[in-house]
Each structure stands twice: as structure tokens, then as C-alpha cells.
Image 1: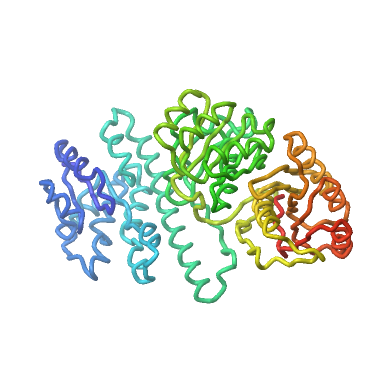
Image 2 (image 1 turned 60 degrees about the horizontal axis):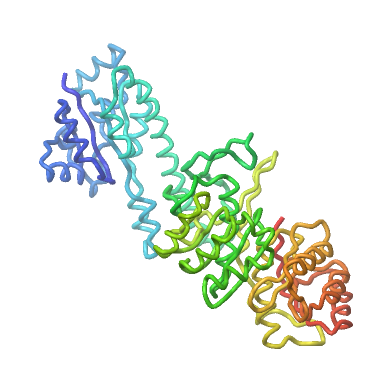
Length: 513
């Protein structure tokens, strides 16, 4: 009996080549709609599904494969004589291979101008039904949903078919699960918009992510780790050189890129253990980087460097002066890439998008479940900050305060940043008390040779006591920005006035736990 393949695909990548090889191996091809036309256009003989079912495609193509002569072949238990008798009675021919991928629902809803009706029309019905039926019956049928598996199927050796079919069935159910999850997420979003409850979290959090890379290990060598990505499994970055990224590399890369994207002006950031240890701005990428590195030269050694503009050769030369783990940017000149090749252990990463892929949630695992929160990406504009001190900021102080505030939201709490209008001067992160973070930042600035006289200080959360203001004043700080909201705000304001300091409240905390 001649083998039969059923082919119905939206993504036609490689399908003509596969079908040509199948025909050469004696397969009979059954296909529908646009797939049939595609095969015919490539000179491949194929039988229309309607010729097999004896029933035309109807309802604008919505119904074509949902028929017993198709699904009887897909679900028959070919080891049972009773099933074979029924197939014969109803004139149903066996199907050995099913090649199906689904309507481009995700690509459709990604269009900013897509209408609801257009999205609904791209919900595939017949495709998932054929995939599930074939995957369920993988003992007898091979199901291919990914063009990348076509050649593997053609290359199968004797004795490999059963395990390959099981693997493809597993992959097929993953495929339909993700497809249904995208549809459910989209309908959740539309429903929330129509009801005016867009800020609500979904009742069901669907984890539609794909493993794109197995990592050497996790935070420590005894921990296994892997990278999963949302939506489109294509990476959002390009590795120009260096070893594959580790777990810690990826965590630091994400922290550095988020921080540098905070700024519209040309900015460089150096991150160590997810905390920015240096942030600088300048007239050129090299000047911005050198300013950032100068904030904490010791911690910058072996750090992760990010710039928000094209990295040129001058910057590459400056970065190469010391050891760095990663350099991240939106683009690199050919001369910069050539210069970086002199550092074999340096990883050079080009960000291909803005790094903010859906879903826009942060996740933290607990033993009892999963904590989910929105990203902390809302900022209160500086013109809405409240001046609570007797003294008001001048233009230079405003620039320094804004820059300090942009930095501090990316530092782990308790977070303190001293800055001028060109970048950070000292950063204190992760201390158990806020005053200790203030003292650490003073110490870091002193080690780097910075004079804090007249600089700005930012705190990610309110000051519970006046001690941090007193410490800042002793260091020479002239202006402070913080959220406010403490029961001792009056005490803190009084301290600022005693020291003739500017004090502003933003009204919004940016605590990074």
C-alpha cells in the first residue's frame, strides 16, 4: 500500500522541498487550500482534501479537514482488526505522515493596527485538531509541526521511527498548548480593556516561554540552569564574540541594559552583581564610559558595561584597558568589533530590541507559589516633585538631582546615590540600614577621588531618621531627593533646613528588594 502524507501549513518554509522528497520515496500527498496551490505551483502532484472527503471546503475555508475520512485515518488503531474493517467499509485510506503548522495568530495580534475580527479569524481550528489527533496516535503516525524537523524525519534510520514519533508528539502538544495560551492571553487582554480593568492580573498566569539555551551552570557550579524566552523564541541579542553567556552574565546583562535605557542622553553604565557601580555621561561614548568607570574603578574590574549609543573604536580601546566580562550596546562599529577581538575572554553583545518583551511582569518563586508584579518602569516627572525645604534648587542642582534619581531606581535597597550633572560620584547598595548605605557611598566617592561638595543625593525610599541627612551634609551634599512618606518627614525636613540643603519629595518609592 502506498504511504500517504497529509500536508496543511501556514508557514511554507521548506515544504516544497519536503514534499518533493516524499514523492520521490513513493508518498501520495494530500493537501488543502493554499498549501495545495503552493505545491502545484512548485510542480508537485497533490490530491485536494475535498477529493478525499467528497465534500467541498465551505464557510470561506473554515471547514475543510474536519471530516471522518480525514480524522478516521488519523485516529484509527491500525493494530485492531475492527478498526481496519471500519476503514475499509467507509473507504478511508491510511495516513502515515501529517505535516501541519497553524494560522499566524501571534504575528497577527502583534500588528498595532490589528482589529479584533482579524485576530479571531486567525484562530486555527482544523490545524490543532489534526495535530492533536496525530500526536495522540503517534504509535502509527508521524506528526511534524516545525520546519526544522523535516530533514530529521528524512534522515531517520531503521529502528529510529518509534522514538522520533514520540518526540514529535511531545513537541506537537507543546505547540498547541502555546498556541491556545496566546489566544487565551489575547482574549483576557481584550476582555480587560472592554471592562475597564486593564490593570488586573490574569486569573491564570500562562507561562508560554521556550527554552532557547542550556547554560553551563546557574549562580554556582553545582546548579543547573537554562534560558527561556517569552513569545518569539528568537533571542533579543546577538553575541558578536566570546564564550556562551552564563546565568550570572544574563542577570547582569539585563540589569545593565535596563539601567542604561533609563537615560536619553549618551550614557554608560558599569554593573557588578546586578548593581550599577558606575554611571557616566559625556560628549562621546568613550568619555561617558571613562566617567562611569572612574566612579568605582575597583568594582568596575570584571564588570558588565552597557552604553545606549553606538560603541566606537575609541570606546573599545578604553574598555580594553582593563578586564570586563561583557560589553553591551545597540550597535558597534566594525573598528570597535575588530579592537574587541584582542580580548578573547570578552563577550560583546548587541541588543536587537529594547529588551522589554511581553509579558511585562517580574516573577519571584516562593516555596508556596509564585509572586508576580508589574515592572517598576513608571517615573514621576521632575516637574511634579515637591520642594519641601526652605531652599529651592538651582539649575545645576536640578540636573544633578534628576540624574541621581534615574540611577538610584536601579540600585538594590537600601540604595543611596551621590551624583553631579555628569554622572554618579558614589553608590551605596544593599545595606541593612539606609545610613550605612549613605556612608558606603561616601567611602566609595572618597576612594575614587571625588569631592562631594555641592553634589546631589538620591534615596530610593524615605529616610526613617534624620541621620542620613546629617551624614550627607557632613560629606558636603547640597541637595537631596527622596520619596517622602515617613512618619518622621518633619524631622528630616528640619535637618535639611538646618544644613541649608535642598530637599525634594517625589512621592514614589522605587525599592528593589
